[in-house]
Image (cartoon, rainbow, N blue to C red; front, side, top):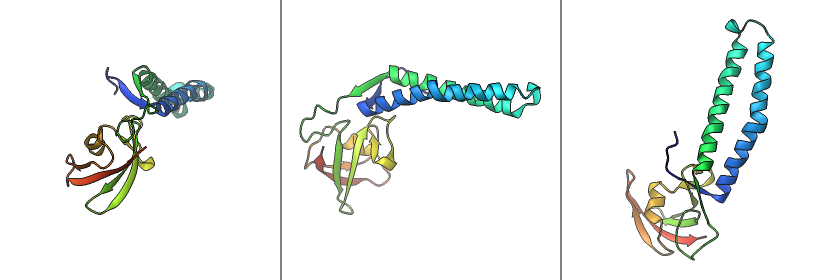
Amino acid sequence: MIDKTEIILTAEGLEDLKKELDNLINVVRKDVIKELVEARAQGDLSENADYDAARNRQAEVEARIKEVETMISKAKVIDSTKKSVGDVKIGSTVIVKNLKNSTDVEFKIVGAIEADPFKNMISNESPLAKAILGLSIGDTVEVREVREPYKITIKEVK
């Protein structure tokens, strides 16, 4: 689970966590309480599958609330508005050229909690991000922490 270290987030990522927490507390938790009340009304709790399911859901929701609260309390927000042109950092959107197959790839570097490869958001802890953090437009680097190392050139940093 979450340890005592800080959690790196963009401002958008922190806002998303706050919205999730609000939804869990003010919507989902209330729905679960209704499910519990309805299941209790069915009678004998010892053989009531609906009651057991509602209790399990309640435990899951409460655990997620606690987890999100912990993430928010340990959040270190990266200010992506302070941009020094060309330097790759957490919060940067980067376009790189893979020199092996001459393809361009665009992605945003975010904290591990926010990473979502389907939205082209990669973790600052990924081999690619580690290889380019601190570099500038035009720099070429080899990404080594992967099965088949490859070279990339940084084309653009936003």
